[in-house]
Structures are given as C-alpha cells and as structure tokens.
Length: 101
Image (cartoon, rainbow, N blue to C red; front, side):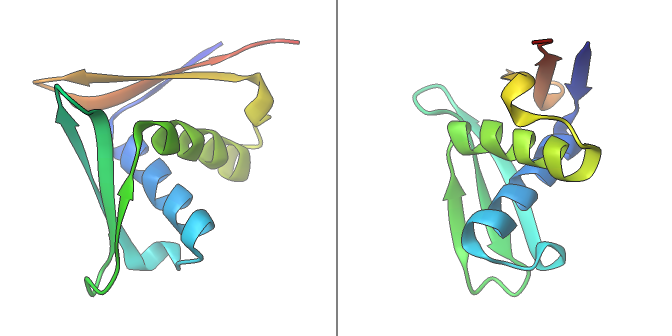
C-alpha cells in the first residue's frame, strides 16, 4: 500500500516531530518547509510566540512522518518506507510505502 502526503501533511509531521522531540505543545507550533539545492529538504518549526525556533533536518522530517502515522493512524513505523520530494509547483510531498513483513 502507498500513502501520499501533500505539503500540509508533511508540515503536520514536522509539528508532531517537534512536539515529541522538544516537549512542546503541538497546538503552539507552526512549521515552514524549505528546499535548497545544497541542503535538500529541511524545515523550521517555531512556537507561535516565536520564542523558540528549531531547525528540522530531512531525516527528522522522515522520522516525524513515521511518528505521525504511528501516533495518529496506528501504523507500525518499522514497516514504513518514506521518501520526500520537492516540486517547484507543489512544494514538498512524501510517498510512504507500507512494507508487509
């Protein structure tokens, strides 16, 4: 089975990751996805009041996607193959393949 995440789904995953990793309240977070040729895909996540800003790596985004699918949709993170993509028109997206064991 394949799951497709649009940019908003990936942003949600970044917020879930940031809340888990840095012990933040998820509803107080916002995130922005970025792409640079030299760095690839990455994100910044910040508290709504702007007091704390976190830089999120591409691997963190992948991990956040697995955490999101585990926490909110009961997928086993060990069965997920996650690949991120950047497209000039559509931004960042993810293709998640559920690997059957």
